[in-house]
Amino acid sequence: MTTRLATDRVVFENISKSYRVNNAGLKVVDDISLTVDPGKFVCLIGPNGSGKTTLLKILAGIEKQSAGKVTAPDNIAYLPQQGSLMPWLTVRENLRLPAKIKNQLDNKLEKNIDRNLKQFGLDKFAGFYPAELSGGMQQKVALIRTALYTPDLIILDEPFSALDAITRLQMQVWLVELWRKLKCTVICVTHDINESMFLADEIYVLSSRPGKIIRQMTVDARRPRDIDKLSTKRLLNAQKELRELLVNERI
Ligand SMILES: Nc1ncnc2c1ncn2[C@@H]1O[C@H](COP(=O)(O)OP(=O)(O)O)[C@@H](O)[C@H]1O
Ligand SMILES: [Mg+2]
Image 1 (tube, rainbow, N blue to C red):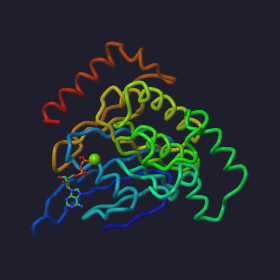
Image 2 (cartoon, rainbow, N blue to C red):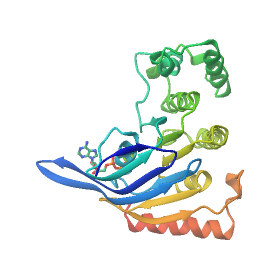
Image 3 (cartoon, rainbow, N blue to C red):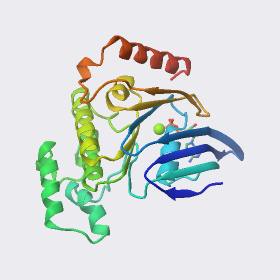
Image 4 (spheres, helix red, strand yellow):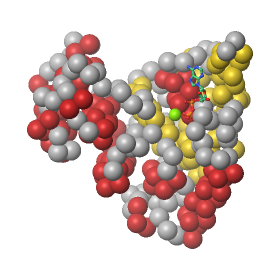
């Protein structure tokens, strides 16, 4: 069965996915089941090619699973790994685009755009085109756009991988603040174990291809979290365990 239903929860039931490559089936996702309650922050980590992006695309409705059932909210913001901005539109036009499509441009949105651009030091770049910005700045704009439209579910595919270390830390803090403000669900793929420990309520580790869940871990750290204080014995042990799992899967 390959139905999609709209609910508050995210549920994968026995999801498998094969692509056709050279006239043969290439299985990339193998029988994944998981449930994410509304308002939770979940990180997926796993080696390259373990089907993480494929899984997110299935959740966003861009790819169709070969088997299994997906349940997800209607109002989804999906941020692909790269290139989510329209190259022919300026930063401001990119931020306006979802509202423009729905004929919902108004003053409140413009003010919101101005406030967000200022907060991220991008106010001088409102009239710039994506190609005129660094990769990190482009990703910031894409994240601001995600935030402007109050989704029930935000799907992020390695959102900070193009950012320098300091910007990355700032964006992690901002993402957690945003998530708490919007009270939405976030499902985020990352390569970075520390990042997943800072962000997530729950971490799922995928095996190498075809991706299966090999570990589910609850991050036992109170919020608000301080990235410098995630070094209790318990959390360090958890990080070590994740590192060992990923090394064994030849990341
Ligand atoms: N559209 C496609 N057609 C054929 N193979 C694909 C397609 N998309 C991804 N793949 C393959 O599926 C595997 C998983 O890809 P992906 O989901 O991008 O993994 P990850 O995000 O974990 O690196 C890879 O081997 C990749 O080459
Ligand atoms: Mg990927």
